[in-house]
Length: 633
Ligand code: 6R9
Image (tube, rainbow, N blue to C red):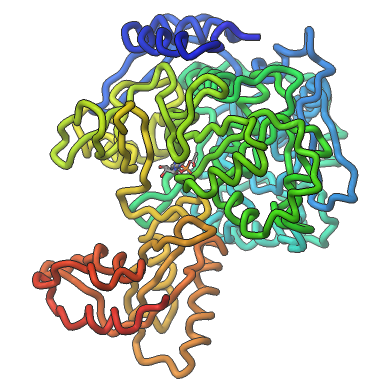
């Protein structure tokens, strides 16, 4: 396959060194293996102060030519996707690269027919069906910017994202199914669209045959439209630094931000990381269990595997339906070789017991992967022993929406593993640990805040519509460095272990949720005066959400009030942001300047009542005793 695959640990060390000594030469060699309509003039232009980062300046390309057209000559009949439906009794659908190419081109023509053009923002709100990948690629084909919104978000969240991006077109489905739950996607979208005058056209795919409202002149059926267009759609020439997509993610402040990625750098980084970390080779079967609504799905269900000409399994459902053996059934049925999943899924399947694993034929597996949150050693060992049968390496891949692809991870079968460690940076990635004052901590056996001190092609370029926010969030904390928001330790061997967020972001089942976002949602409830939200350790989810809530008057029916608050959060954000625990309090621990001391609230939520620390600087230290007395364990 490609010429940039690392073959041994010695080679890793050599290549890593070269990538630091000569980053431009290193990345130019990798980029040279792609199909460019015009070669770049300059590999890299950058500063981290504005910030302004440009890769492959002056180059022209279309990522879909690299994902699809490039494979047609020799591998047109290779399977691109094996789609596994939610209901195991429904038929599997397989698409070859040739079929996928045709479907993407056809749907791209539908988008064009409805006025979509280069630079337009298109919101995609769909279930995990092949048409979601097709919609994403069709946008890229014509140079429109896709903004995929996870199917579990509420109308309110969708509206925020559509308004922020000023999307003009929406692609959705009548409904979706996950487990035994049906999600009325179009109906949720209709509610969102009441608030979104920028949207002129909506294309609706028929999935569940749920009755839907179809507004004349605005709403069109996917199936009908695609019958009216041809299958030939030349790829729009894109500048390497033209926008490929926006993906919204939570941060410390209330409003999710639109992380923006560009065509050239993201493309190079997605394939480079996919092939190296997973050491992918045809005819392996790669199964990433993420949803395309998150970055993991963008990079390792859509772009990375397709760029590599890989065969992937795409799964519509959830790991626990019809029973907690579903992943293993899929592995067995499709002879999956590489399973890339999240610690939260592993812990939940582990809790269901071995009876769901024992009779399954997992002999096809050769590699395992983990992403989304730190993997605890118990889950690591269970995954290694009971799923990988001791013979499959686990690549614990650390990265973020903002990084576009994997930054720190073992390379399968090459990097010596250590449970709980993301191990070493990929060549081309220069991490460092920084202390509170911003000084780089050298040497091993140290810990600090994780930063990256040199650009990599897949990195965030801006936050959509608000460059200052991007600068402040990622480039202003420390001079000349990208700040990840994660804490990290580097052990005596130089191995990295990510310890979790150091900002006000909670990682619930691998999903990033901003505490401020949840607080804003809780505060929307009429009876609520103020709230404070913190994370606490949760056996399955990694972190759970603990909310301290001050109400106007003491609730007559506290249980009902809690239900109301949960409903409110579901409406405003989505079910994933619902607090696990709600404690009613009469006040919050605040400093004299009015800042909530979250450190104290975190300690209480963790149940570590003895170690809340110094409370003498609080406005009202007595409130801490009340909070401690009412803690929900
Ligand atoms: C890809 C993705 C990013 C945050 C990140 C960190 C946590 C992701 C991890 C991990 C420890 C790993 N995270 N992978 N922590 N080990 N292997 O998850 O992107 O949704 O943006 O979340 O997830 O805290 O900062 P995103």
